[in-house]
Length: 202
Image (tube, rainbow, N blue to C red; front, side, top):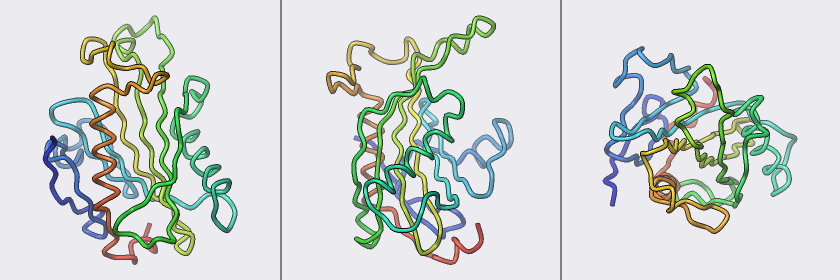
């Protein structure tokens, strides 16, 4: 069972419990990986390849809420995330999500998808990733005109996981996706907005 620690996000305006083995990309890697924009927080597993990304972005879609409106918003964010590679993405399920420390009238939805990269003969190293599982949760803040996107990226690299354990068609998630679901559940349980003024700044 993973250990979790209460983690301040965006200067403490948000807070959530994250796995103790995950480190803030800004401090852990300095600028060696990539620049992280101000509207994003990125945490990466020091003992693996999984990452957790919090994005605060402008709300997409029309006014109001409901499965159709919010489901379309989730699809739009997924398409923006994978860009031109959407034909290599398969969505396995999408469900309403309840956050324990947010008001009941704030809608949230989660999907699980897989992204299988195109083979690149010019870059054999990139072909070691069989697929990346995406566990994406969308929190809809209509009053603040904001969407919060929480994405757990779970690369499945050949030789680094048990292929026999994973068959999403049969409901077999394997350890890495199972761990990601646990991480997401902990975030749903502990995520809290401490300073609503954050959404005026981003």
